[in-house]
Amino acid sequence: DQQVKQNSPSLSVQEGRISILNCDYTNSMFDYFLWYKKYPAEGPTFLISISSIKDKNEDGRFTVFLNKSAKHLSLHIVPSQPGDSAVYFCAASPWGGGSEKLVFGKGTKLTVNP
Amino acid sequence: DVKVTQSSRYLVKRTGEKVFLECVQDMDHENMFWYRQDPGLGLRLIYFSYDVKMKEKGDIPEGYSVSREKKERFSLILESASTNQTSMYLCASSPFRQDLYEQYFGPGTRLTVT
Image 1 (cartoon, each protein chain N blue to C red):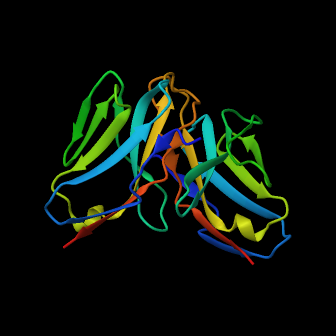
Image 2 (cartoon, rainbow over the protein chains, first blue to last red; image 1 turned 90 degrees about the vertical axis):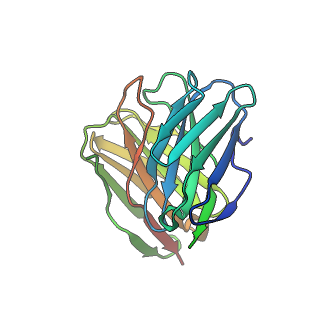
């Protein structure tokens, strides 16, 4: 049973426009959410995160929104740049950190066209 | 900067061979993880370890084993490689802290089993 779902396998946007990547989760015990970015032939790199006590976290061009009642989060990239073209993974963790595993979605491949 | 290194970027092995994938981290992290990434399936956890000589099965441990003799090193072993183990293998580490969830990934090993 997939606990973290990224229902769009791919997304294509024009340079300068907004990219919105979506993620849904089913486990109400998840308390912390992360986004990772992955280029081909490289390991994922951490992008941005949000705790369940917040509904928004912003870092430069990247903003993550969390809607706990809908069990939904989204990553907004504004403005999108060709270098943002990568696979984006949503991940979730239950409260407590420590050695807790992360549960990853299947990823969304973003293509930003010049 | 946290650095996670993996012994090989690309590896080609024959069916039935025993394969060792090595991972080393330099940040004194307690937790280490092995994932595989396949198209359309995202990141799937194979095994993880939260201490030396400790190991826990992830979601897809069949056909794999692990070894953690030193804190900085976590090895993934394919006892008898099969073609369905052709994949990108990613190692990650994280500190044991209640307030930190981020995992740091290595560059990955692309394993091909022929």
